[in-house]
Image 1 (cartoon, rainbow, N blue to C red):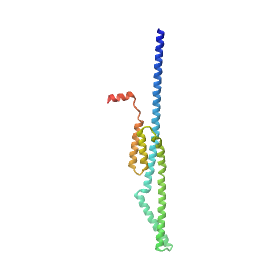
Image 2 (image 1 turned 90 degrees about the vertical axis):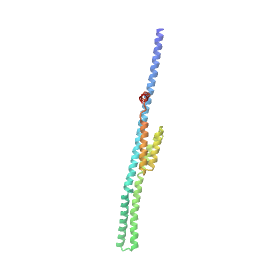
Image 3 (image 1 turned 90 degrees about the horizontal axis):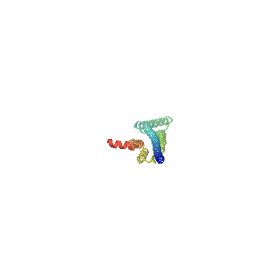
Image 4 (image 1 turned 180 degrees about the vertical axis):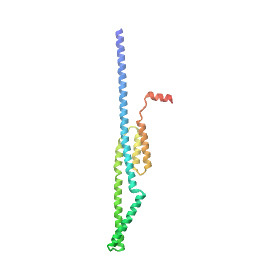
Length: 199
């Protein structure tokens, strides 16, 4: 009888140890998967943030190079000088007043068309960072956390109107908050219980 009791207790303790080991293994695996998911989200969020920063930089450079009042004034002054230079060359060549005016207008138009082409090339430089932002946002749009997916969509919408810097900054802030909330480690049952008791 003692032998039977000893065997039963060995079986019960063995089963208990097996169940405990399986529970600890599953818990450890779940924790590792959660950490891997958080790490992947951080990498994807960083890629999107960098792409948006590049987009902001390209838009700021475009504004600085071509859209400011100083640059518009410079373009106007250069057009006036090109007109005057063309008209002077035509006058030296013996042209009439009408011919001088036409040559001057031609020179000014040539300068302005060159500036227009350069402006379009600079604006086209925004296309590449915008494409990188869209590529970085794609996996985040499918993220299971609805707050991260919604913030990513808001960020892409704001990137579409890169001239509205305030909207883009607000979207970037909302995205950062959603990612921080999603990457904050989840508290264990004991930690949540202690927090409830302390509060």
